[in-house]
Amino acid sequence: MSNHTVESFLYRLGNDEETLRVFLNDPKTALARFNFTDEERRQLLEWDLHAIVDTGVSPMALMLGYFAAHGGHGARDQYVNILKGPRPA
Amino acid sequence: MAEIVGGFILPHAPLYLALNDKVDSPKKKACDDAYTQTVQRLAELEVDSIVLIGDDHYTLFGPGCIPSVLIGIGDVRGPIEKFLETAERPMPNNQPLANHIMNYGHKNGVDWAVAKELVVDHAIYVPWHFAIQPLEKVNTIPVYLNSGVEPLIQNKRCYEIGQSIKAAVESWNGNERVAVIGTGGGAHWPGLGEMEDLNPEWDKELLKFVEDGEVEKLIELPDAQVREVGGNGGWELKNWICMMGALGDKARGETYCYQDANELFAAFVFLQMAEAA
Image (cartoon, rainbow over all chains, first blue to last red; front, side, top):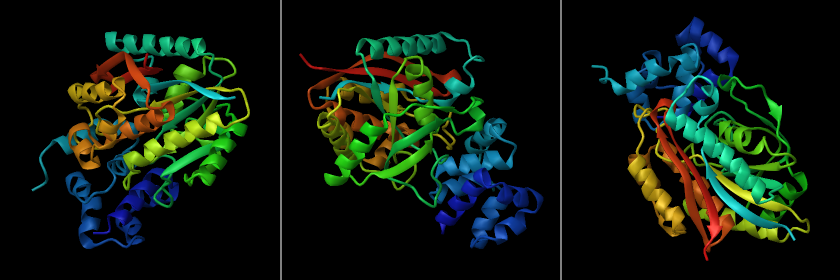
């Protein structure tokens, strides 16, 4: 698992307007620009936060990337609730 | 001769700034009072320069370059985070002393990464905003340790960097009165499912080590164990270790305020070091 690539992508979501714009308009196209495995692509498309944390990605990069893709820090409760909730089946 | 006249641990929780006028609670009020008291304590020490030690939260340094240890030697501004809803402003630096600390380190085993300009994040900005900005003519030298994003700087190295800061200050030909402040720490889990949890028992166990001057007990804590018990935010004890290295072996801590404020999703540590009698 290239968790460095996932971490880089998440960082860009939070800091690169072009990456964020493309991701919000067409997630698959945005992800195609990175060298992800199929599993990594799935995790990001589905925002499978439990699985992404398990890969060892920086939790702060994950949180900030998620916030960027979900309208900002107002997504905090949603983010916490996902991580406190059950893992996807 | 310049000298280090004080050392502190101060909190840097971002929501204390972002929600400052929105949260009204006894614990918040206690933190307000502790920041006021910190300003008074720094004034009583007649501090004119402060080495302020924080860590990046993946808001300054991206995956393209993650420095283990960095010093700001030029213009400094902050904060960088928009969610703090605080206008970016200049933060006066002591550039000659910052350059000297850098040069001393480079000649004596600390390969500082260097920022010739720096826009700081909440780790440096929040304590500056509440404890240093109210003081007149006090300059701030920002130091970033990588205690937030893996691969982490090692605890022992943080202590050695603190020792280098002390030796550099004491070899400087100015007359500065310097305080060293380690920021953050206490159990917290930014970005993880436990991010609204606290662990005051663990915090107080660590603070006892600082109060007793037992820095070696902090140094020997494995990063994996810290993450398990105190979260990835607990790694910020590295900032404390660096401060303790700069204060020397005779320094002991006095915790003058500790608040586990769930309403602000953080524990708040206010501690001052003093030389043992």
